[in-house]
Image 1: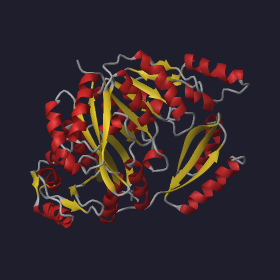
Image 2: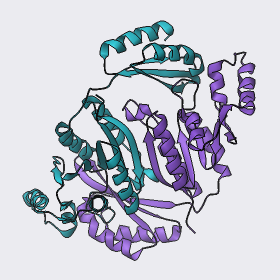
Image 3: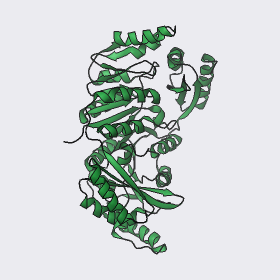
Image 4: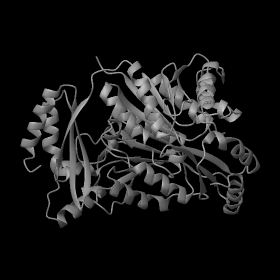
Length: 241
Length: 241
């Protein structure tokens, strides 16, 4: 049986404009590997409602689980929650359970629950809240879409809240061998090994370091003993590695 | 007149598996801003032919320019060139002009042009080659899709080769103000300013630093004087920034 699949949707003008680097993709990818959910696609779209709605629909239909990051804060450019509601044809409004979470947290600090703050309690009908132990304002899950914050510390906390509730698969294992030879010299032996170990996947990721070409050879699969055997064969094929 | 639009397609098992962080997205985003081409979407897909073909077709239809990175090397997992040919219904084979480039470079180093190396001369019919001053093996352009290497130094060199040939637009300018207050306190005044300066776009990007919440407020537009005026108004609204 194959593993469940996943996609990620990053809502990120800041990333598309080159001002900031995305950090959440890398974190989610690492966490999903551990639980055996295969991340198959990531999309980054701008803070544009039609683009977000279309991407949510496409990814929700195409993959078992979808994780979004960004656009659920209190400012006017935070439009993700409304877009999710639109994508699934649901109503959205300030919801009592989310309002209660915010009222308690702000109350404890003696801070008023303003209209701007209440925006963070706008949750589509029927969504399940995602716990936010860092800064209270919850994420939420609608159908197979998990809507989370863009601030990395909050995103990571929400991922930790969501993942234990999902059905995972067989964790994908991998080992790597760094070979300081150009890919064009590696290609033949690597292809032969990939043919022998056809239950594993062999990737070659070239790099350049101090003017020398090399490649990171990565063997992936779900059977650790098979990967061990393939790594021994790789080391024999590239004894100078 | 609005700027030309662009999308990027990253072919990257390595990124989706969490082993490596993408570096090319950030570089391309920064370069496109300078020439007034609006990067609207990025997709990361795995080294899977149907996924690559579908993404190439969708992005080529949806945007003025498409830039791909990854999967054009000599190893068996480099399938991008064949996928591009399939996406556009073109034949692909070793092409004389690309073979000549490789033969000259390898010849100068006294290195044989093996079958694996010749894979890098596989170019779809009718494609224009993209110069690779770093490591010779060319990228190529088919219709509005620019196919480039994944190694960052080579990707960057190819971007530098391609961009001067494209029609750009008005460079998007931006200025930022870092405000050490939670977004929920910023939201009201920021929304008001966004209403007054409705020819500009106002973004708020929250962060957490040493336990304190703040936000990077970013004003974007094409008129530098208007952005200057908006920044003065922002500073007046948040005098503690």
